[in-house]
Image (cartoon, rainbow, N blue to C red; front, side, top):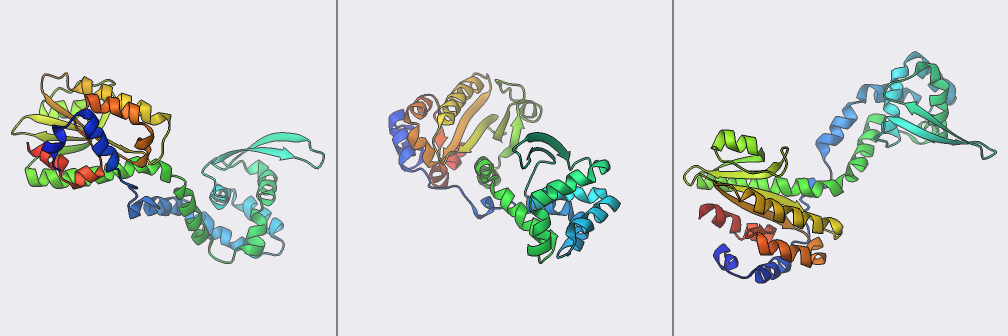
Length: 302
């Protein structure tokens, strides 16, 4: 099936085609670990970590740590990385042997050199001193590299949308080169007006479109939004409603503007009703398989 065959079908038929051709994943190999971020986070405290290697295997490690931190308190800035924490100011619940509870705060961002004992108590009670004394047997830089890779995996749920943007941008870049079109990622209405002299009505001043494509020959802009939902949830209904309204809003312009929504994921199978409503108002809703079949290429060419 090509774009023309798809376009002439009813909204219900297009929805059925869309749902039966959803991808099982959008996870490219780059999805799993952002190695640039891991390396950047590790290098941030590389000097401190190399100095802390001194503590590995020390017999009287508490005394050695106290001596080291008293002389170089800024080394404490590396402690959150060693305990896999992104937070640099920690709120801590202290429970003594009699179940008395107290709260305290330790800042590893701005080190308080008058509280070295409090820092040491925390490091000891967290199990880090025992790790350094009895279990660490290699460079702490290498250890934190692994910790950062693990922490980065927690960000995967937020990477689906970024992955879709990357896929879309690469696809559009190729098409723009082939068809002699201009394009811009994260395009604002101001950019489009200043560079292409097309007025885009926006529902909010900070609105950025994932990709905008411009044909100088037709003096026309295609505004493309993209996302991916591997699981269901109430957010899908809100997103479908948002893009339905957005498509209707931007196309009120007196200039030639066409709205395109590229979305995918098995989660849409749980949101038939809001998606059906979106198909009733948005002509160009494509998934990854449709991009592969050339639907966007045909749209930009026509």
